[in-house]
Length: 221
Image: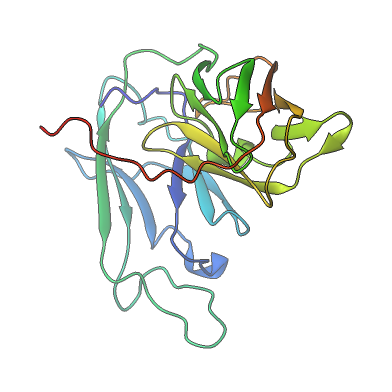
């Protein structure tokens, strides 16, 4: 509900899909009440498996409000790009949503960090994460826009984004060095409306050991 009217729509697939199977027959945006199609442009990022949909129709506005995005499955649906055994999306995926009355012009901000800024004694097997104030454009989250470095050396690792929790996570390829200060830089991340986050820099220092303690339940609801 209240999705910003100036925002793109994003779909991330669980497997790579064939771009030729993404068409106005398999990706459908309509007014919910009348069923009238809404025109859009789209692009598919094969490496991230993300489809970006940019509505352009005059009938995409707040006076109508309710819309439905349908990804078509079944015999004529979206097809994976597996060269050995391509598979169809099993069934239609239907996503109803309502537009906000205003456009989003607010920059996304970091609301929490792990490790926290200037933390010390951080386990050498830690992952680095940030939680954001609003949904991000997943195609803006990458190893270029979220980096962890030691001095002038960028640490290798994998950057992922969880759209359910607005969390960006950097998982180092190997354990961090002990008693070392690392720099976390964010530059170039945007929200779903294209608003750019301010560049930021934070630091943390590792301890000498890895965290090998399993989590435990402290409160049961």
